[in-house]
Image (cartoon, rainbow, N blue to C red):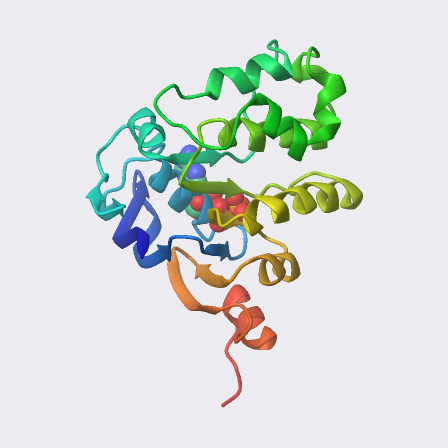
Length: 236
Ligand code: ATP
């Protein structure tokens, strides 16, 4: 069943067209990685799905409902949660407060304070620490945990490994693997090609605002993905 449908989406910043006629679908239970070089339009596309960027044209359909013009908080209520680039936590609030803020009384499911702390045990001892005092990896764990607290149907993850030490990235992805194994539906932006191909069932590659390659991660030839990623012409 299709959960998310993006149709001919155009996004602009003034005269700059960041997303150009992008269409793709995400099925329920699927993990799709959006890949592409810096400036390809991945973050803008994710923000348009979350309701943080109003598209110039096209449609975003979630669970059969056209949500293109719906504000972000209404999309959260429908079951869309974004882990934004840069985490965007409330720095003066504690870990627990940051998590509680996102709990939605209207959405029920397996995620609550206790289950989030089970997935990210490193946060347990830091429950009463202000977010500003956490390490990058701890902050990322809170950002993901905060998104889970709304019991989303669709989890949008924007470069969760950015700026983290490799060992921390490993820990964050280990926790994510558990979440993915439970059948979550995830659309993630990941610059690390190897990681994206490893974690995702399907990959959508963008270049200069357009989708240039799309397919099942297992079936894609790595050289072809690299060529699409960098916009290289491949020998015939
Ligand atoms: P990155 O990996 O660097 O975040 P990206 O693929 O996520 O890249 P976007 O951040 O969506 O790409 O950017 C797409 C284009 O839109 C780029 O040319 C970028 O400079 C431009 N852009 C992004 N945000 C803004 C903004 N707030 N104002 C103006 N232009 C922007």
